[in-house]
Length: 355
Image 1 (tube, rainbow, N blue to C red):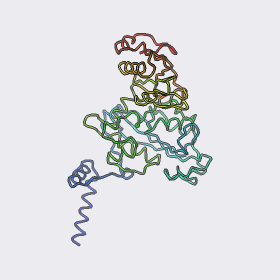
Image 2 (image 1 turned 90 degrees about the vertical axis):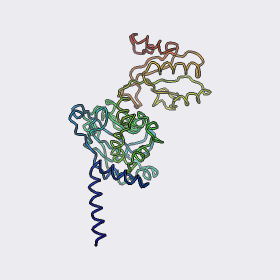
Image 3 (image 1 turned 180 degrees about the vertical axis):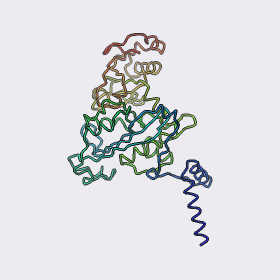
C-alpha cells in the first residue's frame, strides 16, 4: 500500500509539473542529466498562447495549410484532403491558433494504394465528400497570407483544384524553402525530421496533423537566429527575382545545379519556360552582380540577356506566370556599384532589368 501511495504522489507531481512550461523544462533537464531524452506528443498538447497586449495589438491573421493528394503531379493529380488552421502572428512568432477547416474530397477515381499506405486515407473515407470553392474562400476571409511547409507543391494543387477559392489573390510563404534549417542544426528539411529534432512527435502524413505541429516548431527560439517564424517573416517581406538561364547548353548543367539552379521540364516553376534552368534570387544588388559574373564566366562565356521576373507574394510558388517581365543583362551589372547606380533609372515593363 505504501508503494501505491508513493507512486500516486509521483504521478500527481509529474502531472502538476507537466501543466506548466517551467515544469516541463525541469522534467526534461532532470531526465537529460540521466541520459534520457523526451518527446512531446502534439495531439495531447495545448498551444501556449501569447497574452502580451503590445504583441496582440500588432497581430495579423494568417492560415496554415496542407493537402493530401492522389499523387505528386501538380498538373493532373487531385486533392483528397484540405486542412487549414487560422493563426494570429507578429514578426517574431505565432501568437495563437484558431478555427480549423479539415475536409476530405472524393477525387472521382480510386486512390492509389501507395497514397493510402502513406496517408491512411481510403476510398471509403472520401466517398461522396466535396469541398466547395466558396466555403474555402470564406474560411480564408481577410487572412494576409497562407503558410505551407511545401508551398511549391501545395499552392499549385489548390489553385488548380479550387480555382475560385481565392488562393491566387493571397500571399504564400513556405517554411520548407524560406527557413535555413541547416543553420538551426537540422539535418534535413522534412516536417517530421524538424519536429523530431525540436522534441515533438505527431501523426504525420495527415494534412491536419501536419499543420498542427507547425506552430510549435516555428516558435522554437534560437539564441542567435531567433525563431524560425521570424526568419520566415523577414524572407516573406524581401523582394525576389526569378531568373531563367535561357538557352544554356547541356555541358554547363552541373555548374548551374551547383549554383542553386533547378530544372523545370514543364515550365511550371519557370514562368512557362519549358525545359529550362531557373533560380530565385533576393533582390539584392551585390547578389545580382555576383550572379551576373557567374553567368558570364561559367555559363555563357559572354554577356547575356535573360528573362527575369519580379516575384510578389501573390505569385510566389504559383504555376501562374508572374506579371512583370524584365530583362537581366549581365553587362549592366558588372559590379555592385554599377547596380546601385542604376537605382534611379525608371523601370518600364518588358524593358531592361531595373535595380
